[in-house]
Length: 454
Image 1 (tube, one colour):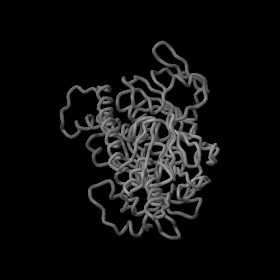
Image 2: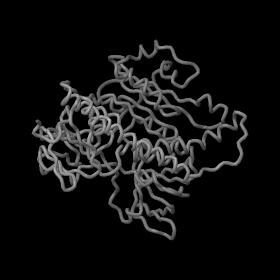
Image 3: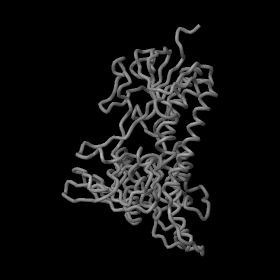
Image 4: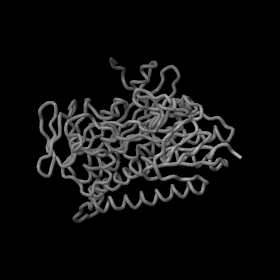
């Protein structure tokens, strides 16, 4: 008989926690998981999935407008925002049930309450304590707001997904992936959107050409972007809000969305008290096997602040289960992880940006920008940008970047090539699918001329 109540006790039933718990359960481990909110975590309940549903819903505005160019007669049209939110809620409710069932079918015990670590092998849930040979922390992250007067009048991405009415005017503070995604959703849905960003283009940290291309496309779509702009304070004005910037400009709106980053959910879990080391940002320090400074405690996903993406959390969680319960020690490679931004148009990227690649050595760059075939008929001025970053010495493709329709779907396939170390010569020898946008990535022949790089 085991000296512990469970072989593994997981804190947090998001993507990483659920994946690890299910995998461990499938190997015969006795597993428990606790969750103070709904099972599914950020991605399923208040992130990727509901956001993508709103992207789909709002993007129909473009499809309807474009239909006329192809001969379709479309009558009066309007968006019932409440109906869209209700449809989203129904799907999230369904997925919440699916995730609970998957855990139960894997033999995992679910505690629908907050957990706290008492010692290296004990978790407290409510007024009861449970022991476990291993503890897994998969508590994710949460939105953070800046410290400005009136910040409480603003919302985050969590509340933005549940707005019962579409605001007529929205101010979005922040130009990261969350900011541009919600800017696109609200804009396509019919709201007047103003973005306040601290730099000169959106998506800080992404490839420079990606940033420039998306910034330009967002502006063309009607989104107003105010660069190098900071919020001074927010006040209630009648039924609306008034945003004052540090340059003394006043912007009137009905909603202010703060998309100013996320922070690890590690407070109040008892981590530091039991000796788990945290970074200055509150992230859990782990080694390549996701083990913390306390050997029996592991951590995966956004609470570790490594690569904060759902598929990465899932991979990390499964690796922990393989290591602990399948005699298959496994580390996740965090290099060349593809990612997408579901803006309108969307972004897909894998590998190194030009800036990061140049910091490592000499590169050749191939860039193309074109108007998609579809829009030669619709008249829409949206353009697609594609880019390859190639190591000059090796010929290896170090980065593939795209801004344009279907970018995430296209880049997922090319991520395999980058992961396998494909060369530009191999790209060139691959026959393209015609007519498609994707074929441009295997037909680019002319290097961009060298230019000064500071």
